[in-house]
Structure formats: structure tokens, C-alpha cells
Image (cartoon, rainbow, N blue to C red; front, side, top):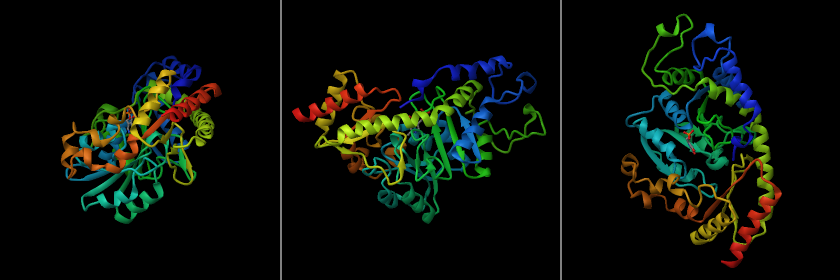
Length: 388
Ligand SMILES: Cc1ncc(COP(=O)(O)O)c(C=O)c1O
């Protein structure tokens, strides 16, 4: 799960260095006062190197990253944007906030976008697809990318959970035209709240840069208060303290993912022998972030029973089965835009997803997870299934 387990001296030193060099907390301006310290800019540059892209833009959250991405592509009124029905509400909120039409697909056994259902839901109005790597597992990117290329649709990756993962060696977030990341406190690396957007092309980046900062073009020829502008925008700027924490966390990212993967592998070994358990599928060539281990059992009743028994020994599950309401579009009747864009009532619109999620259990994976804890989790699951 998380970078928060490793917050320590490195983050504190980075934050202190902002105060020690003049205490300018805004990413822009105040050049004479800041002793050449630009943490957000440095964070973007290091993130670009890590992802192997030219352009990164830090923002205030993973939700705003999605909103800015859509704005930079001029997606709005009348455009359909397709995402998957198993995601966090934020993905759909960003589409609605852009005044576009949100459409959701079923997921398949990867618990990410089902490419066949994606094909069925594309219409002449479809402008973009937002694929999500839920709980750090890559979606079927090769198939989905091919569909988007064939149909001339823009691919965006919501990589909120997938930072540090890859598919066939290519980092998650860099397969689409734009990739968005979240650094909220529960994510693989964290800045408390925060997000990042990576771009394949300069024009998208420049539009996003201006839009996330009230339209400021950051024209080097004039001071900021005389800056040029060609459109309006909003304020989604990341601030320097977040940039400082991000720099320290980024250096820990590979280690976090490696530890999680090692812990997940140990748990898988113990669970594989238990009859009635089916692990979530991973596309071939997946290097997941191992944020969670998801498996399916035969019934919803058993999934809930497993959660109950784990809670008794002080271990919580993660999203599945307990918090599916925040993560499954079939329950989002509070979003009239989503209700009206689907021909069936939402609770009937994604039967395959509903069936899969209802019997799924998601176990959080930690960086610091001792073998004793891993054994305890596996024993608890085994004995619950045996006595069910
Ligand atoms: C799939 C997905 N997209 C976007 C977000 C939004 O990220 P943030 O919490 O940084 O706004 C989340 C947050 O959990 C998420 O799970």
C-alpha cells in the first residue's frame, strides 16, 4: 500500500530545505527570495526522468489531474468519455465536472476495463477513454490501446494506484496520450494530497500548464503579474512543501514496490493451495504495484465472512467487499449525469462487474509486513473457508 509507512528523515530534510532557503511556498515567482529553490519544478523533472517522458505537471490531487487532463484536450459539452465501472468516484466526477458525458464499461477477470465491452460502448460521440489500473494491477493496455488507435479515440490512463508499475517494461501512465497519478495519503507514494500528469506531447502539456494556473502562460519575457493568457483556467497548483515531500518519496518508490511485491508473492504462495480461491487475473507481462492482493471466492456471503474473520484478528480488507459502493458505478445513483447516460438503471447496467466484485476480497499489502502477519492472514482465510 503505501509510502506513508516510510515517511521519515528524508521527507523532513526536504521540507526543511524549503524553509532554510527563504520559505517560498508557491511554485512560481518570488525569485529573489527563494535562493534558487523550486521543489515542485524539480519534482516534475525527476518524475519525468523516472517515467521516461518529456513533460510532467504536478497538481493538487489525482482528481484534479484528471480534470486538468480533460481540459487540456478540450473535452467538454457533448463529448462522451468512457471509463470502467470499477473505479473510484473521482474518475467519473472529473468527466462530469468537464461537462462531458460519462459512460462506464464492465470489467473482466482483471477487474479492469473489459476491452470487448469497451468496443460495444463506443459511439461517434466518444472522444476519450480513461482506463484505470485499479489497486495497482495493469489493465489490458495492449488491446485497449489498439481499440483507441483504430477508432481515433484518445487514451488517458488513470494511474492513481499504478505509480511504479509497468506492463512489458513500459511504465503505467505512459501508454496513453496522457497519464494521471494520485499522491494522496493511501497511495504507493504520497505527498499528503497531490497528483501528477504525464504527457506525450508538448501542446497538451502547455495547455494543461496554463489551465491548471488560471490560464497563466508563464511567459518568461514578462513578470508573473503581467503574464500573457489565451484562455481561462482554474487553480490546481501544487505547493512547494508537497513538491519537497514528493522528491523524497520518489526516491523510495522502487523500494516500496519491490517490498510490496515480495510480500504479495509470499501471501500468494500460501493462498494458492486453498480450494475455492481464484486470484484476480493479471495481463501477461504485468509488473503490478502489489498494492493489494485480490481474490475471488464462490459467494458474496463467503467474501463477507472472510472480511469479518479478518477484522476479528485486527486486519481490514481494502475496498472489497466492504467499500465497493464508492468504487462501483452500479451504486452511483447520486450522479444524475451518469444515470441519464446509461439506458438501463445503474444497478442493472453492469451485471458481470457486479457478479465479480460481489465475491471478491482485497487484502492490503504493506511494505512492512512481517512473515508472522502474512501467515496469520493466510491461516485465517484457510480456516474460514474450511468451516464455511
Ligand atoms: C482510480 C482513482 N482515480 C482517482 C483518484 C483520486 O485521487 P485523489 O484522492 O488524489 O484525488 C483515486 C483516489 O483514490 C482513485 O482511486
